[in-house]
Length: 192
Length: 154
Image (cartoon, rainbow over all chains, first blue to last red; front, side):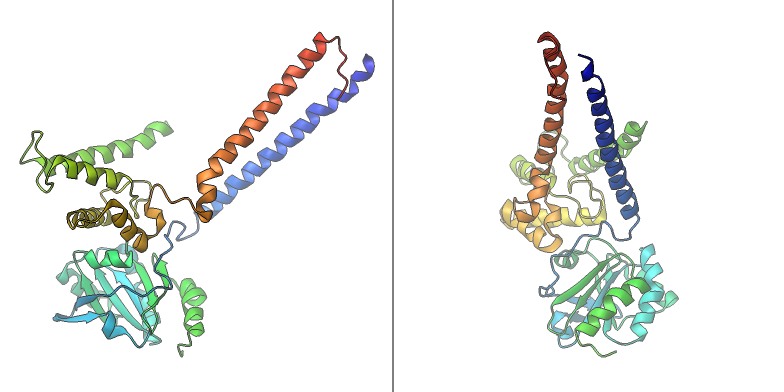
């Protein structure tokens, strides 16, 4: 039957079209993956602590080794807890940004000196300047596990009631501060 | 090429892990449990537990394989909790409360992990459907030819 001829011809065309569309969809997906892979903090873990009470802690103060500073002492006003170490290059990168933010005196910026050496930490702060209201030390990193800390720098915002409101993994930059931290502080009613 | 490039770090990690194990086991090289472990059972439990936990820093390694600082700290924490008599489940809960479900290689089956658990099945089904359709389409002209070219459906 000759009438059969033109009909099956359409079929491969439709199939080619379907394969083409599927292929383009795959390319689009991969392209999306490549573009997203560039985003900072792509593999930052969301903290399960958000909205929950900050872990209880009481740690020695860097500049006064005999004194302890803890979650109870910090209660009543919000504070930013910034995890850093003198060994951490990204902490050096965020240092000017953090310093600028701390100078605004909107909230207390508490340093969490993690897995460091006492002398190195002091020297680092002397060299680059100390933006912190106070620095607590955790050299064996035990307490850090309660915070879910897994690297430096990491930054937590804890409110006046001791609830963790925000966490940022990786170095802070102006963008993060203006687009995330400042609006959240506005929302919490912290005066500028 | 790519395979060998990917294999290299893995090999290095394995060697490092071996080196680490050797260091720990040095004083008693024979079948005796390494210092730190009370007996072979405890050591086995420790390693089994670690292999189910993901390193949070180096996200494609288990806690057992990783040499990152935080992995060492977490291994110590897990060991101390085992010593304190906590069950595997309690230890996992402890870590999940702090680091999130991400630390588990086997997250619980829940609504938000549904796609993770059953996504591969969906993909498999989709693939099977495509294969089935192709097979059917291929066998149809043959059958049609045998039937004397009666087939005109398309």
